[in-house]
Amino acid sequence: MRDSPAAQSRTWKETDWRKKARLWTDRAKRLMWGRQGNDGLMLKTAVYALLVIIGFVYVYPLLFMVSQSFKSLEDLLDPTVGWIPRRVEWNNYVQAWHVLHYMKALGTSLLVSVLPAVAQTVSCAIVGYGFAKYRFPGKPILFALMMITFVVPKQVVMIPMFLLFKQYHMLETPLPFIVPGLFAQGLRGALFVLIYVQFFRTIPDALEEAASIDGAGALKTFYRIILPISVPAIVVVFLFSMVWHWNETYLGSLYLGNAMSTLPQELKTFNDAFKAMYTGGAKVTDVNEAIRMAGTLLIVLPLLILYLFAQRYFTQVVDKTGLTGE
Image (tube, rainbow, N blue to C red; front, side):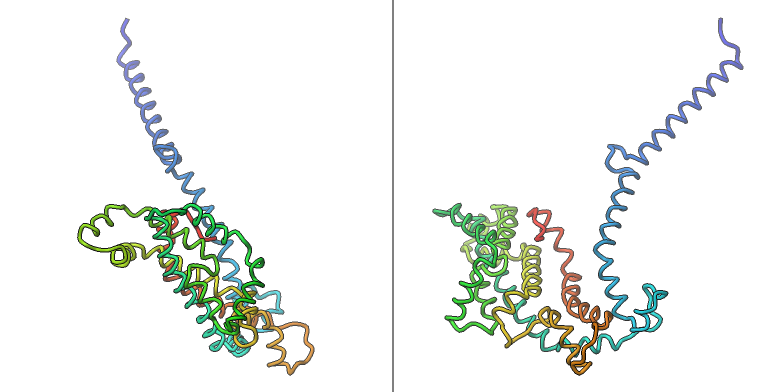
């Protein structure tokens, strides 16, 4: 017995409603979880939330430093003043500038960081290219010995290196940092060679073969073909080397002595220098926190500017080498 037209219409409506409900359910699932479960709204929300939290952890100290450095002493002592000071105190930076002997210490810092970084960038590129593209007797052994130099703590070889530099009259000059860099050594030189090795291995051998067919020798191929396409690795190695030399205070105080002083070394004696310059050596409890934050920000500022211009190269090298340089 056939259903009445009213019953058939009701059945069609129920079927149509179920289809629409199923369609909206599928759309909601795709929206929340994505087509393959890895590109939906839920995953993106979780990823962005995690990135915001991690970013805040890294940015918070810098924001706090900037906020504190512009506060007057009254704002620091007033618990009702939060992140934004009532009055911007530029004198904090003026005093920190004089206490740090900023221009003189900046010149020394650039001398003992930029020159060794340039030396390491060039020498490690040559060594890394040799390990990545050439076969020669004892290559695995030499590569292992090179990596051992990265594992050995610098405190172990500090005294022998000091005596060696003293014998060659290199102390109280930037030479103890520059000379090792010329031979692919120095601070974390083995790591830079490894970064270059991993990067050069991603370059197809067809480029070198084509250059060889065109009559280019090994050196011409390296400088005319390999280096131009290795700019990301070069920038990252230079940046890491400069930052590590910039922040090195232990070896800096050992090799430079009292003849030269870098900005991080000046920061170590900031309290004593401030008391001697602005309090006449009187006994005071502590230095104004805002002035200390201003001095710290002045020291970090050159590195922040450097990172600002070089940050886009990091992701390229991390993708190709799998190294982060931490």
